Length: 326
Ligand SMILES: Nc1ncnc2c1ncn2[C@@H]1O[C@H](COP(=O)(O)OP(=O)(O)OP(=O)(O)O)[C@@H](O)[C@H]1O
Ligand SMILES: [Mg+2]
Image (cartoon, rainbow, N blue to C red; front, side):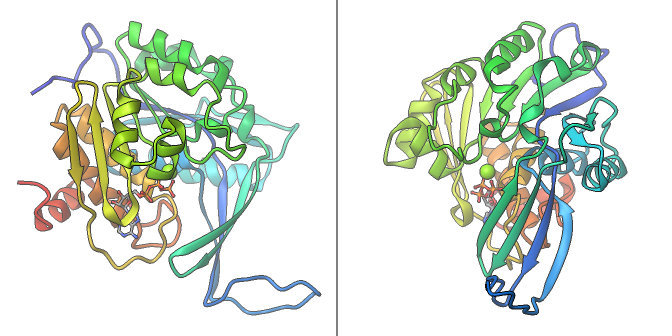
């Protein structure tokens, strides 16, 4: 088994995952038909919840739930939404002491209208694009075994320096991963090739992977992206599970887990946390995929991204029961 448990000479590292990214809430509006009607029409919906939102923050919560010692660097406004997010992360044992609070811009937020399995999302970016490389404290970085970045396409100030940051992390014995999520500008570029070249793990979904790679097929796209430098590219395929392509050309497929879906918000981020928790423990890619799929699927049991995330024991049990783990 490959030992990723400890990088050479890093016995002092007491942060398993340092997460860089967006930290904003979701206001989740649930059906039966949550479509708004203009002309000042007021209609009842089933529920409206304020929940932990944003890919990076949901990932951090998933990682903490899986037992990883997790720290977060992000930017919030000096407002109720920002305080809600920092309190919620802190309550899950995540170190948010390095997060920056700015009076200049309000915390970003999304309103998510959930209609059965589909979602419509309205987002005010607010503080989301403000995170800079200079916001990452060197002392915190030095304590981290692994660096993860979510929603790279939204992090406009950080993205241009990310390849360099990943390269420096690698040099210091820290492994790295990122999830791009959707590109609102649909350029599917943003210097991603350079970041990919320096990263260890890349975790897009199927729609993102095919666009970035410029390939039609998901397996083709996964292989092409893996050839761009990372150790492993993991492509998430919703209810169909996920595929991993390794640098040496190896391809591993993992089917999805059948669950009673309540809300798929953040399933991809919970998957990322599961995959990386197993990967950081030095487990083979097939097992990492099985744990990832279980974490993604189990997270859909509750409203919002972080309400129903699995512990490692729950994920292992679900994966085993479905025959995905020996
Ligand atoms: N409808 C579903 N039923 C069962 N499992 C699901 C479903 N949707 C997602 N999952 C689980 O979550 C994992 C990741 O989901 P998905 O492919 O939607 O990622 P994503 O697009 O990155 O998600 P996100 O919307 O969080 O960005 C899947 O591999 C699967 O295990
Ligand atoms: Mg995603």
